[in-house]
Image 1 (cartoon, helix red, strand yellow):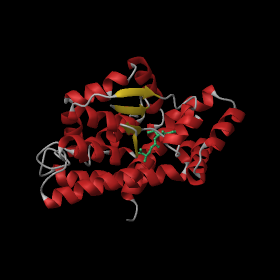
Image 2 (cartoon, rainbow, N blue to C red; image 1 turned 120 degrees about the horizontal axis):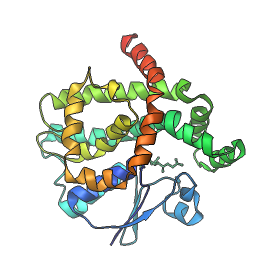
Image 3 (cartoon, helix red, strand yellow; image 1 turned 45 degrees about the horizontal axis):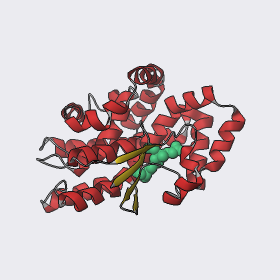
Image 4 (tube, rainbow, N blue to C red; image 1 turned 90 degrees about the vertical axis):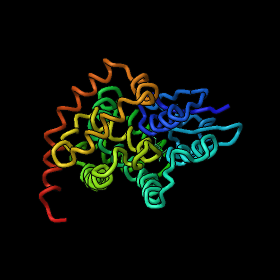
Length: 269
Ligand SMILES: N[C@@H](CCC(=O)N[C@@H](CS)C(=O)NCC(=O)O)C(=O)O
């Protein structure tokens, strides 16, 4: 039996749920509330010492890291059918899975600098925020989170995140000019790995990052959202009124985000 520890709106949980849905795999789900700190529960830390979701347990075997979980599921239950056979597309897909670490970091920065920060600051005292920060095991992640809470959209991590995404959109564009999917002619692991991240940016009212310069990404997002897996793995876990509230808050940050984006776009290198 597959057991998934996940978060309803967490992007890397969505990513794994997309893979499970594409592969038609049943699983027992354990939802963690990341806002109240379920990820720091000592029993959960035994499974995932990084205090993050998702974690997959397959017959007692623990697999962490969302991209590795996707690869594991595809190899174990699908004979690697979601990995392109063509050597070039296969190498590119593996690179996307690796790049997801940085892309996840970017999406995390953009979410935390905007709506998550607003939510946390409204719902927690400075002491409660400090207590949450101290629980983050990795000191670099902890200081990054602190900087995002202190500085919001002015955090250095926001500029770094936008640079990362600019390079991702540019590389997605190259493949999408030729094929319908980032994985190539067929839907595959690269698409599954990227969808939740781009969908999050869309929900954060940041579609202006790609719409005029990288329109291929818009077409890909629309095609991806039409798949059944999107409804099962992402849409069905979202509370429409919470998503609407998030969007309303997110829109207020767009002017600052778009200014930094323009500086990057017009600046040297
Ligand atoms: N590289 C990891 C990242 C995992 C991660 O950071 N997950 C986030 C949710 S998307 C989390 O659990 N955050 C916990 C927190 O914010 O304290 C993966 O892809 O699995």
